[in-house]
Length: 189
Image 1 (cartoon, rainbow, N blue to C red):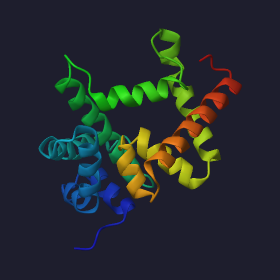
Image 2 (image 1 turned 180 degrees about the vertical axis):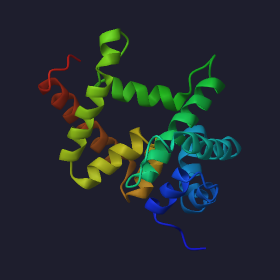
Image 3 (image 1 turned 90 degrees about the vertical axis):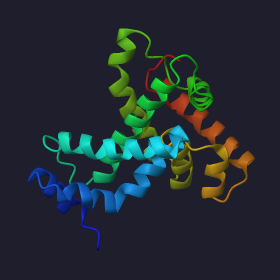
């Protein structure tokens, strides 16, 4: 079966046609499952996250109508579900991957531990997005793969045909650039 265009899939959701779920699974199922598995490192739970994503999309469309950004919409849902699973699984002990990523990003992003920091989270997200748009495509993609998709250094290295040391160096430089950018934007780090 040929995959439907995103616009058509969203129209199926809006019409409450269950074909939308099947079409979404055919077009994006493997990508969503891989995203969840990169966070959880558990194929069975990743598959559950994928299925939960379809149900969540069913509940969120409408009111949202992601005609032009369906995959990003679904990926965000999947990522949040996978992170929730990760938190539940590791309530008593923190995941080494999450600790590692948190430690790396702690150097350049202010802590949202207070109320003001939480309110500024949305504005911070916009500032980070603006910063990422200034980067060359390869640097931006490496950064996103590492910190949004939570891929390992080895995986990012393989994906972009770089040595692991080059990926680490590139990420270090991007984090420093992000830190400097946020300081210029008025953030206290």
